[in-house]
Length: 125
Image (tube, rainbow, N blue to C red; front, side, top):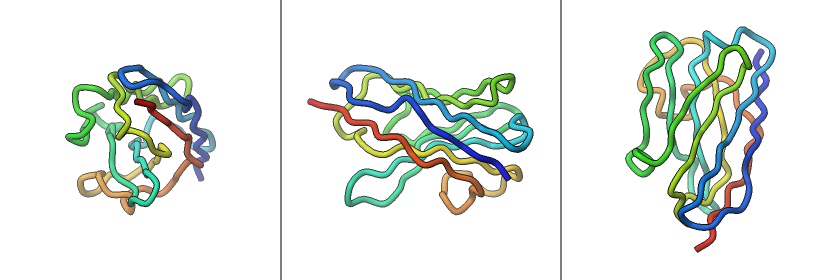
């Protein structure tokens, strides 16, 4: 079992930056594939980014590519999502997710076993 706790959300003006953190506990963090998803009001949860533990490779949704960066610090059992050049359309609850065995694209929420509670990000125009 893995427990995930997100933090770092808040209110920021358009063009600003935030760094989200996802603290993991319960199992060896280094062998988990990590993902970030978000859900805006009235919309379905959508993929944002993932990082595979095996080779550190990353993948981003087109909407955030070049602005967001996923990373991890295995010594701290923490994953991060650095968000720059934020836009009002980035407003959502952001969730981190983890899965030990990577199958498929890792771009769908059903491909993850563990989820955090979410952290709200609000970008004002």
